[in-house]
Image (cartoon, rainbow, N blue to C red; front, side, top):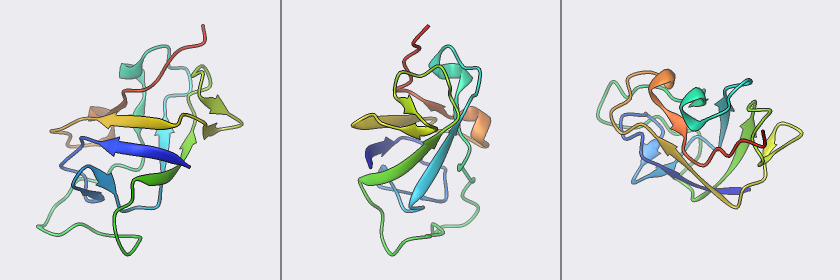
Length: 105
């Protein structure tokens, strides 16, 4: 599991920079830089409460990853000890990015 810090405050799963979804998907199959990735699990918050898949937000989370060129991607799973998802004012997943992405190219 990976420690996740998420700045996408407009995501329905974000509670105090932690994710309450349980797992996320980082997209960006051909990414060569962080801006070409995104959190495919992002869902814009439309009400005041978050929609929890888990009972509570967690620091540790399963991160599936499609970014084939990232040094932390091993068999479509993130092996980084910790990652960040950026996108403080995101309205959709394309407004987010994995700020921990490192290209192995």
